[in-house]
Length: 116
Image (cartoon, rainbow, N blue to C red; front, side):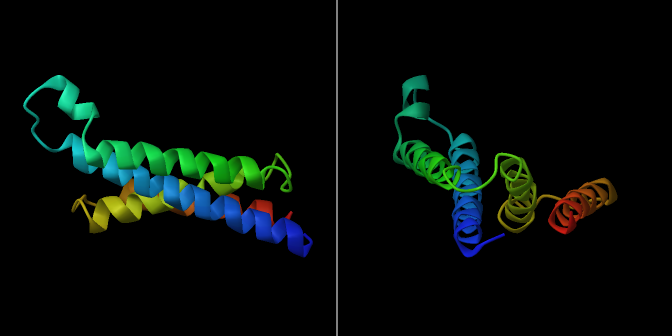
């Protein structure tokens, strides 16, 4: 891979990370009580999460101008790592054997792609 492709792959990874952060914001918002159904969607946390998600989508679109289409899903798979990390650290979720195995398989798949 040349330097330009690496730069855009980095942009894509940032976009995936930012998208994972927006999921955390949405989960935080979902855990709150609201006085009416409309307030569930029109509160600052949800609006910020969707704004961040739109920004992440724009970054992905920018990255796809340079990275191969086959690389996108591989980089997108890193979101499982981010979401699991946030789930464990922020929400106190348990990291069982099955999740660890799944994450190891994801990392193996990314590694196999990188070597090929």
